Length: 280
Image 1: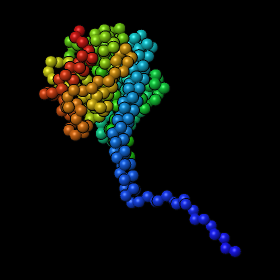
Image 2 (image 1 turned 90 degrees about the vertical axis):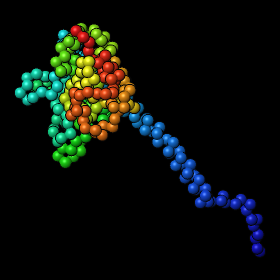
Image 3 (image 1 turned 180 degrees about the vertical axis):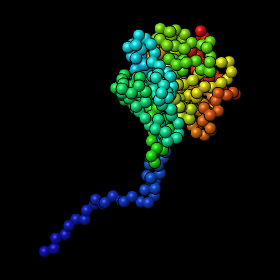
Image 4 (image 1 turned 135 degrees about the vertical axis):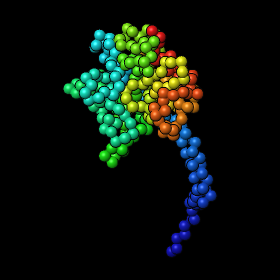
């Protein structure tokens, strides 16, 4: 006996055609293109947040040092020679050579047995990563290997340091109680310094009437920088002039040109002056 079966009425779905695949691919590519700027913005925002947190930890360490030392500010003496008996908040001279200073974390957080160690190290649990902004692009080749430089921040020369360019008519602060003008909430302590300007741990601000830059600030975060203040808070400052936001390494390093006359950037320079120090 033959058995006859009823043909199925359910047909297999039609496979994707080449046109369908091309349309789907085009949609996916469009979505990726739309999302790319958002991903870049998210990364930039995340780096700025980490940078601000670094500066927050550094200014807390700066304050704790003063609390433990009769309100005296941590010395800001720049890069010290081996035979220099002074100490400072960070040591070493950063550049773009194969100098070991560029990768020497002992100059930031080394042990107390080494008189050249960074004085804030004990207050940071000797965590050297705090000294580098994640958006800092400066790298050097040492022993044939490309390495990140260890530091992105410098300290206002008027805080625990010395007058810039012998400008003795302005205040150099050596104790917390000295910081009254500008008041602590507007008195700059540490800043992000531009990669091709940063060398020692001092950020020099010229207070003369000329349009002269001492050191150049960074503009790593959407055309601005993070900076810390003597009251312990961290702020963000956007720059107005394109001169500051120019691509790093696109021109000779600023500190090979400065001090020198600046034809633009005066509003930005005046901001730095307003938060750096005040007349005696």
